[in-house]
Length: 440
Image (cartoon, rainbow, N blue to C red; front, top):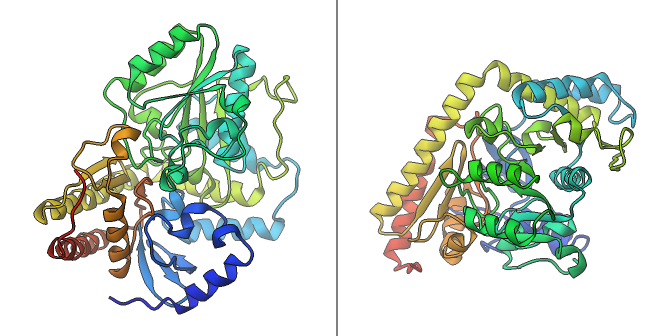
């Protein structure tokens, strides 16, 4: 398939006059995979259309929030009704408590919650609460886990930093980075050692319970349970960053799947139904430290925005009412496409590791099992780039980075996943026939 991209190229050149790299978020630039980024004009269900009229099957879902697919009628109607009453008040509305009730009913570890506008706000605010509660400064995070672009969290992060080969970020003072302790994911011994080295100094451990920003990497057996035990033993808080996994792996997120009770939880993506929205919440004794009740300050003019509340309510109500069929079908569709592509890679003699949890999946171009950031970095990113470009030519849009998880939605059908596997078969056959060498 030959795609016409003249309009997208023209839009990219125009964008470069106004935005660094022509984008408002780095991975959109396609630097990691090569080729020209299509500019999108609309989406419906599981499909996207670009400015040149090309159609793509969507496997990144706006990086996770579109669990019901694009332009779901219930969500569109909810946003339209809310917009008719005003896009923003900067004052309290009843809809905030309506969405909070849905979140707390689904995630029992959350007793009180506060809405914000982005996952970055949620994680930085949760850490502020943890420091206020424990009166400690150090934060443990894990290599390859991305918790937004707050200064103290851009230390050995994954996501865009991994995509561009950056260990951190310019503009982050060492005095701030000093308080972050980056440890290998899935390594409890390293966590024990850090607590021994910094007794009574570590405020919290923040973790993606299923990593999604070094690609999809599941927790090792007993790992999350170990983090819960260690933090309790040392009077430190456990923060689950469920911006990706919340409402995706199950209605109650990863903490429902793995039966873990974190102290604080960060949510985003799905919670706003595709409209910018996030939240952090947890035990009432901790959340009540926030102003206006307590000394930990956090605020946001657009927090609890009525459009986001309306979209979030429509999404979570639908997921609550249809939880059995939605999560059953997501599991089946994602399992089918994950295993199908993996089988086609084996048939073509291309080394590949497939990691999947629920409707999150990554195909790593490496012969090494991927269990942490170091093993993720063994992936042949050039091979992934070629795979990505060729799949786009087949009408399948995967995340444009080896180090990002792919997501399916309830709008994906078995015919869609069958088409995807067939597209991968053609791409792998070509890669094999042209003598592609992949690092082992």
